[in-house]
Length: 248
Image (cartoon, rainbow, N blue to C red; front, side):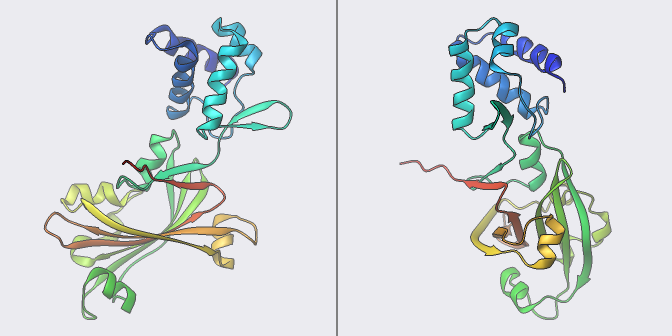
């Protein structure tokens, strides 16, 4: 999106007015532009001077709005006086959402590259995680998850085969599929740890040798307490942040 189109979108967003201070209105307009992919991640936003002239705002107002978004991690200041939409992705630990939902909520287009999908016998770790026996069948789904075509994570999801009779029926979103079968989980238990990426993982994610991964393991439950999914997701530590809100 070029500068003029961005400025037009911001002007339209501001025209509605909210009664909030002007810098807050500009913050919200910029957030909306990012959420709706009018400003892509990594894109350079119009300069302070351009924003002032186009929107009829003072330099102090524009700078205060940008400072607030930099503080919140939505914008990054770069060398050469450029401000860009932050490339890091935040994942809240307070809600149970799918990868696709997380990406779309941030104005990114989710995608996946299938590595493998198979129906097989469970490993000992999968038996323990899913509460099943060695004689049970599972579906194991391994995917490279992308955001705007950039590799973000490697995901391995394991489910009892009764919940996924045909693994090939799953498209880009496992939870969209589970929604159609009435087996979408309603509760999850997660644990997280950090580890160095293996050579295979670095090649898949396109990261340097010293890349660290944030590894999230999730066990998901249905309303009746049955375990429907065990997923291990390995996120790129250089672009992903986990956030949790604490309330007293």
